[in-house]
Image 1 (cartoon, rainbow, N blue to C red):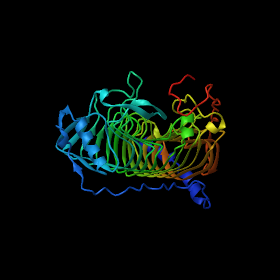
Image 2: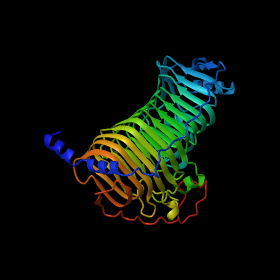
Image 3: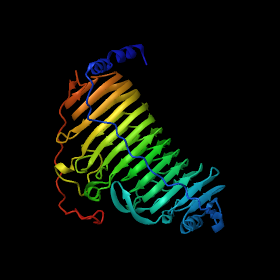
Image 4: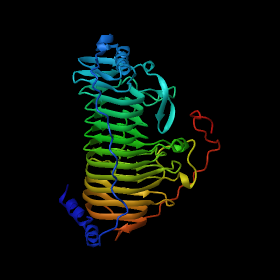
Length: 471
């Protein structure tokens, strides 16, 4: 960085804003940090059942398909009331395998579970894809309507690169790496995962979920938490080509009618590298709602767009609320640290939530103790519907350097406090239709354009209607 630029950054910093806030009387803040409930996992089953797939004919040579043998081992554990299937010494080539209740799949450090490149090895079932239930290929490792499932070990679970893209020519969604539907008590620890162009890890309708020490490498999303409760993601390392973590809850009238939010999510001590979108994304499929999310002590090392991106649109309905992110280190962001976009993110649903009810309710966002390094934009938060302003927004104790500062629109109960960020270009703060504290000296923005109203679909919505039915 040149001496002239350093001088400009220092001169253009937000120190005056911080000093003004520091002199203000103690604030009665409406936005409060989220405190999610943590997952409660049952202890590992100790019934002594331990099964080696070689007992059922597995070769583990990386060439012979071991699907039947590995599935027999998993089924054996399930009918015995639970147990542990251990993969050791070799490469187990398999198509889709299903894990039953009270079962642990352990992949040792000297073993690889390798996905088949033949789509015929993955059954077609109902899958959640971009917020709707549609026909699709099931995951390499999957479970449904099960309890107390564990995946562990220091080994590798790898998808086939012979299945490119996310959707087949037939229109069916391609296999995820892991997919768990309606599982209560799920633990994935220490594994190294590699996925192709489809999502890596996708829990749906799951309760009490832990991901710890997992390496998530892939060419699409890392972990998509979809209408789940009490989820902890801890000490995981992400290197993905789309969102490292995405929180979702369904799209349109189907999502709001089912009404299962994603709630009580804790993300701690993780490292993120994203090559196409964001490190942490919330949305845009949020029609069941997202609430009580805590992200802390994480490193954001690379993001193609914004490190943190909260997104939705009219027609989604529901809410995004009680989001807290703190003690973060942010660098390598292509566009910036934080973007809020609740006006036009993602595809509109065939059956949107119409009218005022379809405008998402958003608020109680707290971002504090954030350290940024040369991010192009600190905060871009102008795509907020003027008919439902964001209620409760805190930026506190933010330090570092950025190209452009903070832009805010259509917010209430804002607190800007302790912001010591040097801004290279433009105003340090610009706002329109915003009330709160720490807004002194803000430049004026052009008001956000009001989007067109969302009208009801011409075809009445019926839960369970075949996807793609004529509109």
